[in-house]
Length: 279
Image 1 (cartoon, rainbow, N blue to C red):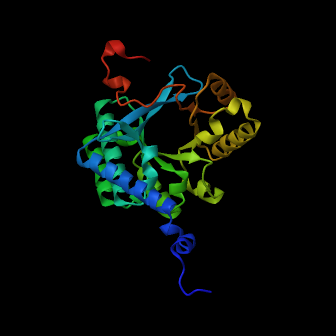
Image 2 (tube, rainbow, N blue to C red):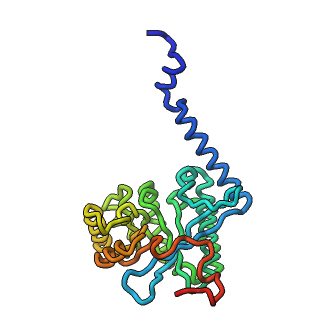
């Protein structure tokens, strides 16, 4: 056996040095640079999407504020296109701070608004995020009871004990919590019992086309049943058709969210002239 590997052999035994790994690393660097540039130039905003009650005369229960950035060409980039890359970097914490800050601005701008904002469990102990939260409460004494913090299932499982303690403290002040993308991760039921989330948002992979997918119908009913057992409000994500709406309403979902009811918009109804507002 030769003492040294040929370059091609070395690459096969070292995936990190492969062309694919290089391309992925380069892509991730490009994404980080794009986000850093956008934040440096203050090109971040929230897009608002309604969460609609399944059975009520007052359709909108609350809005979700989704962070967006604008790239150098003026394109608005949704979080799903960059959040996985920045999640473990400090810039991920900065994005959480900006989302929360802009959420408080919206709550202050519209006193009747109830709003959910996404955050990572990694931001629980981040000093800037905590200060942003405290400043928001000081500026608007009603904000806490109108704020919902969404934590993804995967993120919550990173440090469940810390998240549980954090939730308990803020729930005393009136803040609600939503477990986002329920069903996509590996939540231990003992943790679900301990968390006491106010809202469970069922992952869209189970919801899209659910009216004609028997397997997803069973899974969705099971997830709704689990949430109700723990007295948690249920939201179906990624609702995109009237047939899915009918099935979910019949199944007992509390709320629905998706393009069927409205796409995320950076110009929410309360910022429109009264003559252009809809119910």
